[in-house]
Image (cartoon, rainbow, N blue to C red; front, side, top):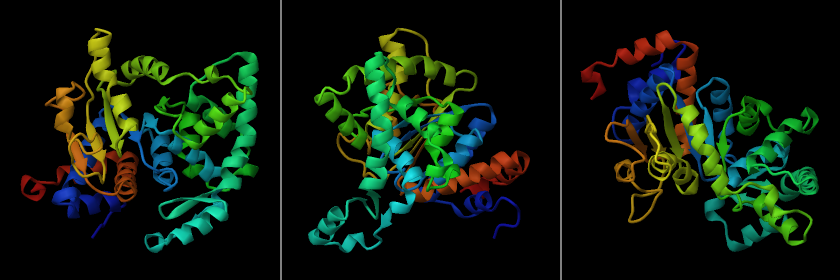
Length: 344
């Protein structure tokens, strides 16, 4: 049992011996070694992690300098904001596995949008945020200004006063990232609720589509951001889920190398947490070795795959890393105590 002020790290080191537990432990140690040595870590977050309140773990990790940039889906971006301003309106459905179509119809009629075992309130979230965001789009249309998708949300989440906070602002990863000015790419942002809302205002002529910079412009800007992030010991890639949130940013390395024809550092670390089964043609289920053939990773890149639920693994991993950050000497001593025999 843990005997120090580092209970999570001790627990992982002492109990996570094999299978996905072993992969989690080894990924944690390599993550710590990388950031302790001055390296940076870039996170790609897919799925519905903001609705699942992963911000409780992500926000303090951002403030502690353990996360240095993001690629997120448009849904994760907006849902972090929703959790801040509409938290009290969410409803949980722990028995969702046993729902009938009629049960889900009643949820619809209650103006809730179910995401697995929780739900986003239509009026308190979508419509409440809409009244702030749409005027910003219209003002940009009139002024002829253009910004990246996340910049509208960075501005809004910092402008909303505490009186509108229902969720804990210390548990809002988007607010922490905005305050830290972290680089963010939001590939495929059109595939989100506010992407649809924006499209409707473009269709009616109230807003110009050009006020939002494109995904191609995201990549063009990310070239420079990657160079900055990879300076020194390099930048690692920590991926939650799969799909475009992961595939878009990891491609920056081969794109700089082959498309720009310029030298570039490879990713310095790779870890993916996914419950996707390895399958034919699936990016989400592709093994890291496949990425070597695309020149995204190299044979020397520390690589880890944890086939598990990110809502379980990420809080444990980041909690242990925060312990390491608070007491690095003690963390190093505990990790060094893993003899070759105990590592097996």
